[in-house]
Image (tube, rainbow, N blue to C red; front, side, top):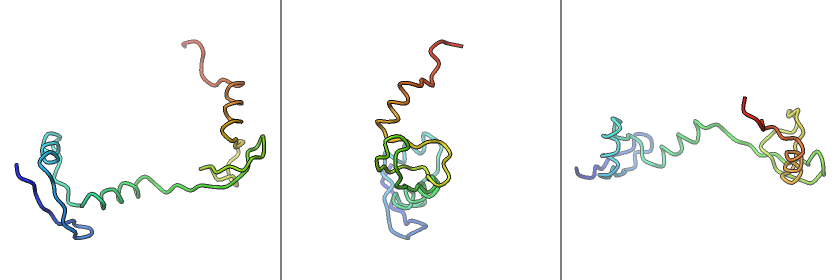
Length: 99
């Protein structure tokens, strides 16, 4: 099996499909890629959805933190890591006995 040179259908750049990749795709019954690795990665990131970061303060100690929750719409308290770990230690959420 020789290395295959292909043109990306998205950006038109040439890319290689090496022997090991061809063998893996064949083993998994998958077609050869039509997009270059960069365009495939971009597509996967777009499918994952956008993520935003927000500056806010910890509900308990008022330390400035950055979180992935929008503080304007989040109804639960937002804690910094030390305050969260302290809360988690005092409020176990996992079952201690099997059902």
